[in-house]
Image (tube, rainbow, N blue to C red; front, side, top):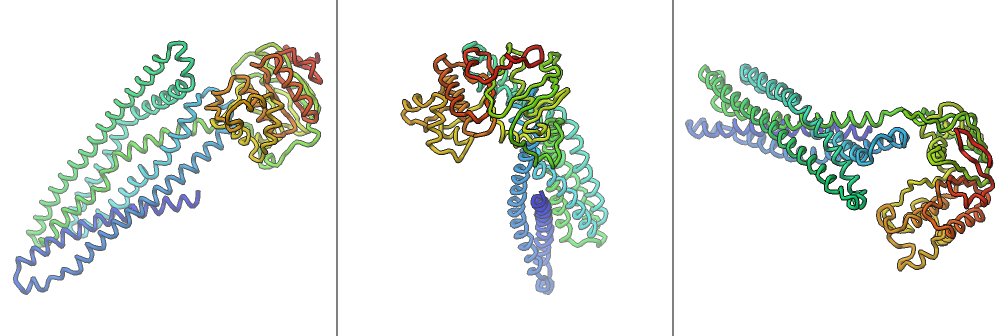
Length: 549
């Protein structure tokens, strides 16, 4: 973050330099033009005594300074904003990962994606869209008031009072009028993004059930509300800008009358009158962006609140020493007096249950649907806290092992596996980038996909579509099993691996697994009795306890 801080500070400095250069350009130009006109009307001696070179050089200096500072300010601030967005998204992602899935179980994927993309971008834009305009207005206004006061103190006081009204009171009123609307629009936008993601993901089912039109209408209603809200915000912003312009014109007239009065008593020269008037107009250039900056601040504040609410979810504490904790061989799994139930759910999954699985064993865990067989994965990876007891892998409490470290010892093929949009080979190499084509061929044979791949025109280079949509359910599941095998971890947990397979393919798949992976611990969570004879042990989960079968 330190390099980014330098970007932010330098961007603020350049923005102020650009605003001051613009003020200096108009200030000196007004004096130069009027002085030249006065000198031209004066006597010959006065005209020859007038030095036009020095103020002309000042005009050129301020013009070049304004161009260069604005150009550099755009580069520096936007580069800093992009770096800030990158750092913020990385930090948010790092905070969200430990919450999976317990901390995110009540959130939709579209909502999380919206926060990760839109909210981080909105918070990052706070620097360029809100912090710089307000900081520039504050710093430059002090300089403007001081310079005007040096020539005509009463004009400086008039400008100061006007800048307080236009630069403080108007933004406060804008904030008060816009906050509730922007907050409601943020909620509606998040809801619409979630609905849109779910509609696109489940469009086939919605069309079959003839309720796609209802989902589309909901999205249209949300979009209509956002359009109307955007129009209201534009009206508020344009009204505030118009009010600032009116204040500026009033101040210009007041300062003009004050300057004429001062000229009449010889406190000002004729050339200084337009100089002060143009200076007043230039001073308000830093105030005009404040209504838009106010809206940007509101959006950033709301987005920050949403991110904090999502990222501040309590997860299991792990010390720096835990980063170096690893299971010790042999990698036996020991569960001691474990009690577990999901938060806010009355049903008990485990009730002081104990279980030991030795390394290299092939174990099937069976039980009625809903008894919590799949919950063993959540307990093993400490996704949810245990009520009592402990789970040890290789003699080490799994709570002391980071999720990344544990996943290097345990591979899981869950029921809700995910395949990425790409080819068969790309999905397999994503799991293990160093895998060879021969290893891919061998693992496809084990999972009974070799013949299917041979019949494809492009073989392993065949595109499988988003989430493997071009594959059947059984083919996609077997490809997910192949991914788990290619990770080459000591443990492999398969949750309903033969679901969607015919009996012949089911038997062939399980026999290949038991034959080729004799040294690997394989735990199969299943409700199918046909594969149980192939296992070393069968364990029944019933009434919150494990029973040998």
